Image 1 (cartoon, rainbow, N blue to C red):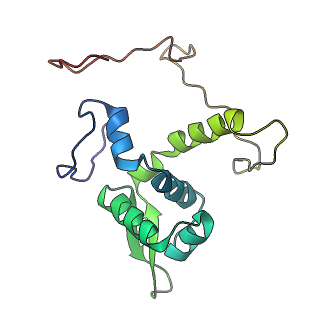
Image 2 (tube, one colour):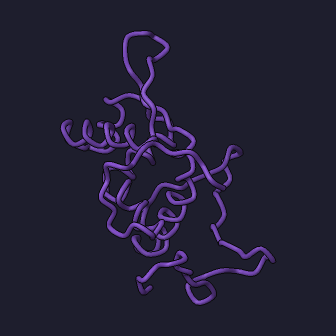
Length: 158
C-alpha cells in the first residue's frame, strides 16, 4: 500500500531502484533499529532510550534526529509539558514486521538451545507465532518461490 513519506531528495541511495537497499539506507544501522524496537515497546524519552540501549548520548541524538527527519519518529511535548518525547509515526509502526522477523531469526540462529532470552507476547500474554509470508493464494513464500522484477527501463542485473 503506498504511503506518503518525508522528502528524501537529500539522500544518495545505495541502489536507487531497490526497496531493500533504500530501507537499509534509512534504518540499516544497529542503533536505529534498536531505537525503533524500543519505541515499539513503549520507550518515549531520550533517557529511556539511552538506558535501554546503552547508546552514547551523541549517537542517540544523531539517530533520533535522523529517524525524525525520515518520518519514522515524531517529537512532541510530553503530558507533563516539561520534556519532549518521541513517538512512532505510521511509517515507524510499519517496521513492526521487520522487527518481528529479525527477532524470530535471532531466536532461531543467535541463541544456543535453552539459552535465556526475551519473548514477544500478544495482549493476552501468548507468545507471538512464527511469521511466515504467504502468496495471494495462501502458499508459503521463501527465497526459492519469489523473484525480483526490475523496474521498467532498468539496466541493472539482480
